Image (cartoon, rainbow over all chains, first blue to last red; front, side, top):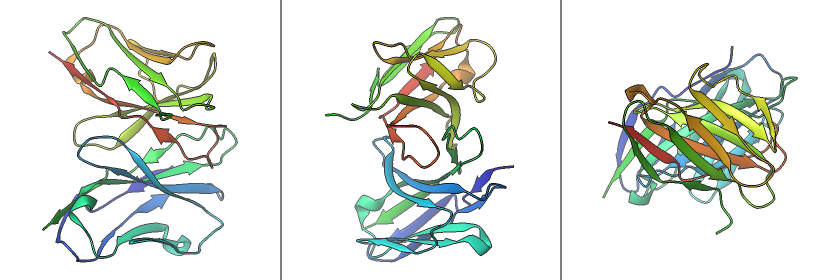
Amino acid sequence: AQKVTQAQTEISVVEKEDVTLDCVYETRDTTYYLFWYKQPPSGELVFLIRRNSFDEQNEISGRYSWNFQKSTSSFNFTITASQVVDSAVYFCALSEASSSNTGKLIFGQGTTLQVKP
Amino acid sequence: NAGVMQNPRHLVRRRGQEARLRCSPMKGHSHVYWYRQLPEEGLKFMVYLQKENIIDESGMPKERFSAEFPKEGPSILRIQQVVRGDSAAYFCASSQTGGSNQPQHFGDGTRLSIL
C-alpha cells in the first residue's frame, strides 16, 4: 500500500537555524516520484521539487536541499539559515507510476514549521 | 496571471444546499485534479479529469459528490445536500499531460464552510 509519513507535526526554530523536515514513504512500485509542496499562511500550495525514484542525487536550491535515500525510503528536506518567511506547512507527496499512471498525489500529514525572529 | 484559478475563494452554505466549486487550469493544461484538505489534515485525492472525461474517481465519496470538466469552461466540483462534514478546503491542480512524473500546479483553494 502507498503511504507518506511526516512524523514531525510541528517544528519551531529561531531564525538562522538549520532545520530538517522528515518524510518517509511506502510504495511497491519501482518507479515513482516524490514531491515537496509549501503551504504558507495565505493557504495556497507552492510546488518546490520533484524527484524520480531512479535519481538519488541530492539537490540544492539556494537555502533548500533535499536528501533522497532509497535504502531508507526517505526524502528529507533541509532549510539552511531559516527565515521568518519560511514559516509554513510543508507537505511531502508520492506519485506512483503504476499501470494506471493517473498521477494522483498521496500526501503526508504535513509539518508546520514556525521560524521565530 | 496564468496560474490555476479557483473560485470562489470562500463559500458558505447551509446544510442541505448545493455547493459548486470552479477551477480553471493553467493555460495549455488539459488535466485537472481535485483534492480535499480537512482541518488539521493533509490533502486527499478526490478525482482526476481530462477534458470531458473522468479518468480516476477513486477518491470521491460515493454519494452527493460529482465532478465534470467540459470541453469549454472550467472544471466543476459539485456537492449536493451539503453536511457539516463537508467543511474543508478544496484544491484544484492542473498538469500539462497528466501522469505521475508531471508536477501539479495548485490553485489557491476554495474554503467551504457549512453552517
